[in-house]
Image (cartoon, rainbow, N blue to C red; front, side, top):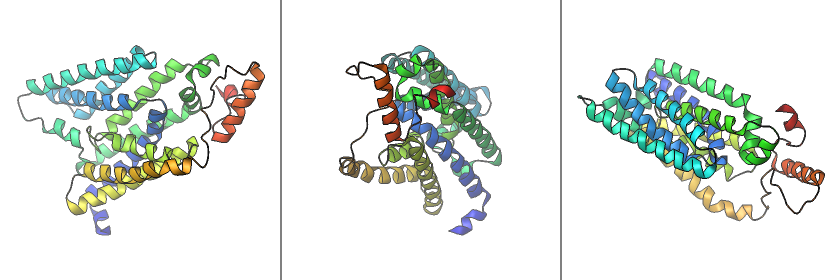
Length: 312
């Protein structure tokens, strides 16, 4: 089995898969916390329309996919100011994108093999150029996420309190959707549009069932994402089965027992409330700040009373 590492296609697949697994795991945590799983699915669907448009114009489908997902992410962020408005905006933008995708495929005279391959992923067929593009895009995404990590984490848990503290909640939401669009664009080359949740949601969802500490969740999600990717690629290479199926099967196979068993050990330790919840029964502001600091310490979250506020 180790002989497979001598082949360039396996080297490219493992390098690109590792990059995507790391970036998707970090981004996936915020996707779950912020309730944006529907947005991740919608951006992947809209990306297909971008790939179809690029093929119709005779350019690389990846560039069309990136342009469409970025445009959709910004549109969702601008139109969906509140949670109830956001889902409506996502649905409207997604249907428009899918309609455009169908039109572009109908206008294309040949067989749009490249567009269809994006649906299922072609990780074993990517080139060194694709690996380089994935590396640059992934590095850019991680750098930007690190730059906004603390305020993004704060606003994800309690956007109302974060906005009251002067955090640009809406601006962060748009920036994060742009980063999510980049992650989706580089992920579909590996896992495909139809199974984008496998790397974007699967590792983070499993890790979140095992611990409540954000930094531990992200670290564990990265390890799980790498495990899914590496085992899935080797499994696909040895069995000649689709990589997307292998990775999705491993992800589900680990998530299911964790999901079923997690209630039993979570009963033994009560889950602390979310950071920043305002309790109307507490009359004094100082008492509320003390409670928030205590809850933050229990959850392992950044302190939102002094350190985090000063860093924003």
